[in-house]
Length: 140
Image 1 (tube, rainbow, N blue to C red):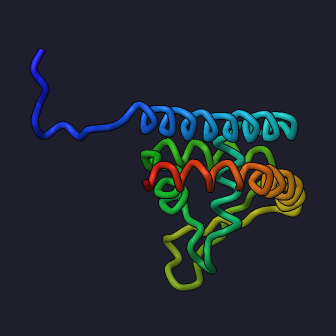
Image 2 (image 1 turned 45 degrees about the horizontal axis):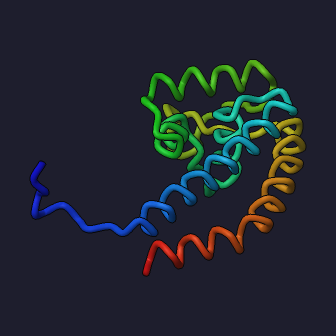
């Protein structure tokens, strides 16, 4: 089998680094999914709450959630509908554009998200040395 000349040349160590990096990311995702489930949320619901909380003033819309979660608008609408049904967010009309609904977390959602975010920050701190080392190896 001939080798494509445009194909990048990677060493065995490059493959190990890439595999280790993906494995570490997957471990974090499994950690995150488990913590969200313990709070009665799906990973996607947790991610949506986090995106809404992190959005700037008057930016948390269904479209924003769709963009941040890489979803189609109708999927984001369904997700927001479920979060609203769970009592985790409310929609209010924008004062600038009454046609636009802004999303706001409820106190219940803020409490859950604060707990999840604290544990996630600790896990990121724990993984930081490993991720830094993997990113350094990947950049060499």
